[in-house]
Image 1 (tube, each protein chain N blue to C red):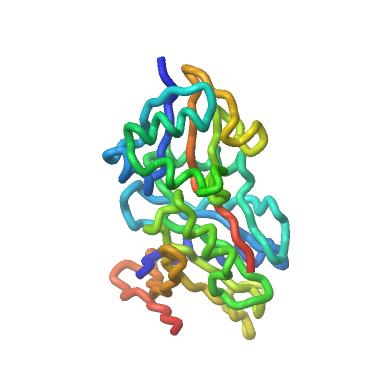
Image 2 (image 1 turned 135 degrees about the horizontal axis):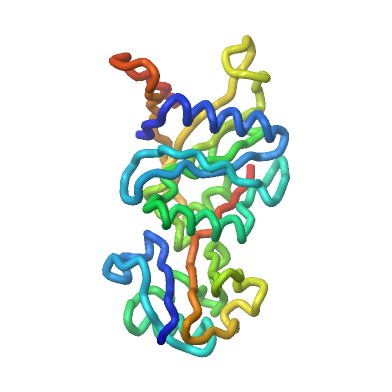
Length: 92
Length: 161
């Protein structure tokens, strides 16, 4: 078993057009490193130079937004489902 | 160029009027990979603010799961400005240029700063404009409104420049 990761349309250029990919790791950070090994460039899109999750990206582990569960330190395990989405917001 | 049905256009404008003076927001879904905005999905502005809008994080996940089940994607992301012109703000551009935001999205801005209570009344000047936003660059595009209830009728094109 692995962790299933849903990829937003624009980032599928890194996954050969695949909507979902599989990865492994104990934390979200480790999972992203693992994914980046197979789908080069993905990490750069999700994690800033300061090593933080990009603020315009939402990541969920199952139904939980990782902003509330420790961001990149969020624990993940086999069978989890991770979803990456663009944050939608703005202002005048 | 954004091509949009009259009914869809009207639904977006009605939502903007209804939530005024707070900003209204939502998407128009269409078959994934196409440029056809077909199904209006009004979203709650979690910020409930006249100067900011935000899809609630749980609502966003639910929305995308639903779109995925239907093989749809958001062709249009719309929101209103209630005191300023229908032009993307710096914050709008920031989010729309985010690394997971699809540059094929049409960003519709509606301004209700001079709106009446309903379409067609004297003095009603709801602005409806559409943009592409790619890597911080904004380009306005024409909006073609398709009068779907009148077969054979030529479409009305609204061009703002």
